Every structure is written in structure tokens, then in C-alpha cells.
Amino acid sequence: MTTDDLDAMIADAAGRLRRAGHVCCLTGAGISAESGVATFRGAGGLWEGRRVEDVATPGAFTRDPEDVWQFYLWRRRQLVDKKPNAGHDALAEIERVLADFTLITQNVDNLHRLAGSSNVIELHGNVWTDRCTACPRENRSNKAPNASSESILDQIPHCENCGEMMRPGVVWFGEMLPADALAAAQEVSARCDVMLVAGTSAVVQPAASLAYWAQASGAAIIEINPDATPLSPLVDIRLPLPAGQVLPQIAQALSG
Ligand code: NAD
Ligand code: ZN
Image (cartoon, rainbow, N blue to C red):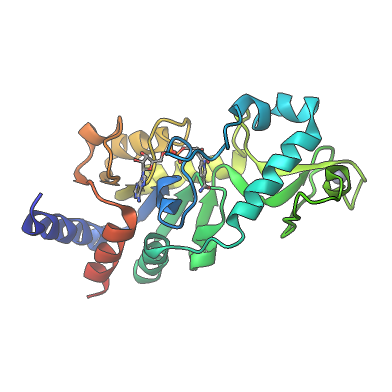
């Protein structure tokens, strides 16, 4: 792809966004890759050599809550010093420029909010949330203690309402998505005129189906991902470059 080709595609993308009544963006782990957060399938591996079933399923938590909490506290520690990158920043800027923009993310790392995006649907929860295993209580937590001498048992939070054990506020494999978040995501996907799809392998369901849903409802799809995905052959514009490179150019073309 030449620079001229890329410039033409960026201009095309910005034009479509400007003309659209409603725009949404679906993001995945790839948008945080340039912040140094490992993607699920990427090199390095988020799960640190742990099998997903051992740490990210309801069964794992029932069997060994300490082990699962240990893992999520480790994930928080990994995130403590991570900052939003140019891709996150550009999406916050695009939200400021467009009248009606919704961000749907599969990420649990909170970086979109840190970048300043406010209309965000978190499909898979947020690692900085504790949720009660017995009652509806949910709260933000910035606790990311070191796996030091302190026993992990002392670090597991308990509910201020009912005293039961809290669990990480993320969606595990084999669990349903939060019904309100999924319904909101489906509503905006069906309603949007353009959907940006950035940094997702488009294979984790039901998140991936949102792009197909948007397209079936008449939306144009713009994909930003260095690697091809199952969605790639179907999209209207495919920008095969890192999100941190392409999204700022789109934001600039929109504001300019
Ligand atoms: P994935 O790991 O399956 O796929 C990441 C995609 O991003 C790949 O297609 C890759 O080609 C692309 N990518 C890599 N670098 C990129 C860049 N700089 N710019 C644009 N694209 C880039 O991620 P997924 O589709 O989000 O699904 C994995 C699941 O794991 C999700 O459910 C998510 O909740 C969870 N997860 C979240 C985080 C996070 O919060 N940061 C990290 C890892 C996994
Ligand atoms: Zn409770």
C-alpha cells in the first residue's frame, strides 16, 4: 500500500464518519497492545503460561478462589503503570468531534476511560471492579497489592453489604455477558451508520457478532488491524496498520 493509497482511505473513512448520524467503535485487546498490554493471542501471552480454564472460568473460582484472585491481582499490577496510547486518545477525540458516538470495548483494562472516552460500553467488565458473589454489590477498587509475604487470603475483598467473598468484576469464559451492556451494544450496533472495528480478532462471541449485526443493518464497516480477521473480506474499508498509527490520522482528518 502506498502513502497515497493510505491517505485516500483515511479521507474516505473520515468522510463517512462525518456524514454518519451515529457512529460506534468496537475495540479489542489489539488497541491496548501499543500501551504494552499483551493481547490474548499475541506473543508474550496475557495468561502467563496459565491455562485459561485454570484462572478465567467460574469453575476455577469455585475450586480455588485464592489462585484466581492471585492471578487478577497480578493483572492489576501489570496495568498499574500502563497508559492510554495514541489510539485510545484518538477515539476520545473522535467522541468529542462527533455528535453521536458510542465506544464498545471487549477490554477490561480501563484505558479508554483513562484516555477520556465517556460513552463506553464495557462488554467484559473491568479488572478494577470487585463484584459480590452473593448480592448485587459492585465497586471499583484500586487495590493491586504485591504478592509479598502477606497471604493472598488477607487480600481477597469481602462485601461491605453482606460479608460474602467478592470476585473480579470481569466476564469469564463460559459466562454470559452483563445483560444491560450486551443489550446496549446491540442497540447501538443496529442503529449506527458506520462502525469502526479496531484491534479485535473478531472471533470472541458474542462481541464479534456485533460487527456482522451492524453490517446487516446497513452500516459501513471500517476495520483497523495489521492482521486479517474473519471479518476482513466483508469490510468496506480495511486499514491494515496499528491502531495507534491510523486512528490519530482519522481523528485529525475529522477535526481538520
Ligand atoms: P485478541 O487477542 O483475540 O486479538 C487481538 C487483535 O488485535 C488481533 O487480531 C491482532 O492482530 C490485533 N492487533 C494487535 N496489535 C494491534 C494494533 N497495534 N492495532 C490494531 N490491532 C492490533 O483480542 P480480542 O479480540 O479482544 O479478544 C480477546 C479477549 O480477551 C477479549 O474478550 C478481551 O476481553 C480479553 N483481553 C482483554 C485485554 C485488555 O483488556 N487489554 C487484553 C487481552 C485479552
Ligand atoms: Zn454482598
